[in-house]
Image 1 (cartoon, one colour):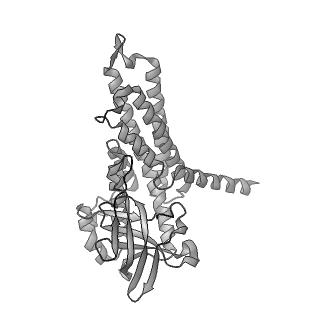
Image 2: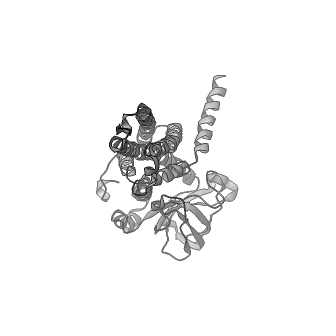
Image 3: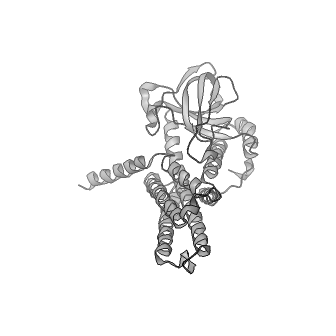
Length: 330
């Protein structure tokens, strides 16, 4: 966010590092905050001055929460299959449809919504609109009850004959798809850093617990098997962090980020899934206690495997690039 609009003017790597540090305490809150500020940044870059002047102050003050509405009940990773339809009318657009699995939907009043303007055009018909959920024709769907990570406030919206003025179209048909793809590479990069942050916090917790837990005339940290388990976990975090930072730099520099981001998110989410369980095992039954964050972190590791494209979608992106290279070299 530029300083002239009330931000700090930091680079993308700063955003990724802040996300990583906050995730040490709560992945879900970090993800919520980053999604909120992602919309604020988009308004700063792409919205007309009068729109930015109206919404940015209240967003930066936390008085209005933002979200991005892409996924639908019947369309997720297949982005071009969205059914929400925007029909052109005098002075703007009338939108009908439903969005689901939206981070911050429980509390957001402002959303960047992707809508199809020409079903026959496929992805080339997808546009992006700034929607104020306080206006007529927008209904909030009750937040979903999930196994953990409730701070992301996941839910949805229904739009029925909702009018949006032309000035609030922020991505023209065709550009909406490109904007979404660019945004998802950034999201996958910082999700990877967040997985590193929460896993490293769990390793620190397990190491501290093991150093204090008395057993067999010493402490359980004296046992080589336990020590090496945490050492291996730390190595996995370091490897995931390098992949995450490589993707972060690609996003920041505007270079090709799709494959670095796919590698980073896939590896980091899998790593968090596995190593958080191992940290809990180190702590024995104590790891189940709610006073420790491990159960919440394990739920968030599961969330990390789904948000901004499933682990399987990352594999598909990587495989597509791999076989494209193989054909080119043959």
